[in-house]
Image (cartoon, rainbow, N blue to C red; front, side):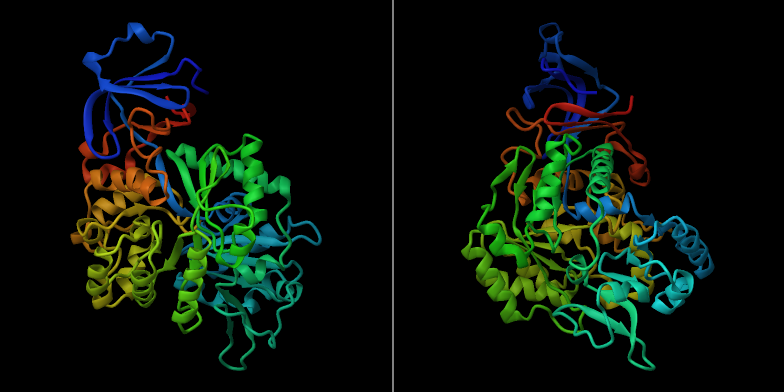
Length: 510
């Protein structure tokens, strides 16, 4: 349901205003903005009987959650494709049976598109080869995207469709894995989204619009009111697709859209950094991918420096994907010399003491993903050396050092669920009940600040979003319990009862 023009009044509610906890407040919403925030005992209900009054003494109100790094179209595609996440731990025969079943429903000439395969599932090692796919689905072009977001598997028919042969030269930064025995391609491609996007048929527009509607519903049901699309391959056609969804009223979550660095010239001829495409979408910094997946740093230091200078020349800050310690260190080194306001680092999964000290002295923001501790923590503990393990997701160290830290999901790598991320950041507990570097735990207040006001500053919207203050956008989430007063082991059980975007009630669960 939607809030009426007369407004919405949350009465006698405990709030986190983006910076601090306040009890027994009344928050009045009018005309898409926060009209007033006052202690309940100084607020007259009689003067606001025309508003929808929400008696909220049993609830907890905070600014709408901001997810500062995810991939909208990729996440939306997972909602209409074949989800393989539930195959995890069930073995190769379960995968075989599932693929045979779903492929039988694919119309002639269409692709089988699967996603979220756990690439680190040891029971599926034998399946990560096109020979397996050729045996199971020989007559349907098939692509399986891994849950890491950085790799995929194609069968031979799919490889033929995209023009991929043993002689195909790897584009810079892309890896085509090969069989050790004969050097032939085994069907696994890493960091190949850009290569494949131009070669695989697009999902039908009507299907993609439905997928975006489902993605929007997922966001608002979890209290997410603004997202940042941090996709490396973002171009004007992608922006237009999402803008159409907004215009069609099927997408009402706010969006910051990052251009991909390969499309910088295309973008700068049409939009400026910070320019609103429509009332719900603003152009963000340029996304640059820095990785070691090809066996070496790509792009090189010199190339990265040129890219950053080019973005800055055209008025765009940069958002640098940096996961591995080598990448993080390189990005910090260059940004120390080439910094522009709004520059940020994405992920910073591994952070050494030295790089932490250097980062603390910069004004570079960080968008990181504490939810990975919950979903991937068991693998980290099992496969990461003790020397490297202590450097993973150093949330407390960065916040204590004064770094502007924002929280995000990196969906579809993991589900965009801020309350799981809250639990993960505060307890450092994995899905199987182990604990990863509890000395880097942060408080619920620190998490809430990071996912609201800090994220708003990180994305350049700190003057209008991320706080419960007079004049700010009425993007709000009502929870059934206060994270600040909840036992840590129960944080992930908190639920969203209501979500507002621009003063409209877009989700209600009571």
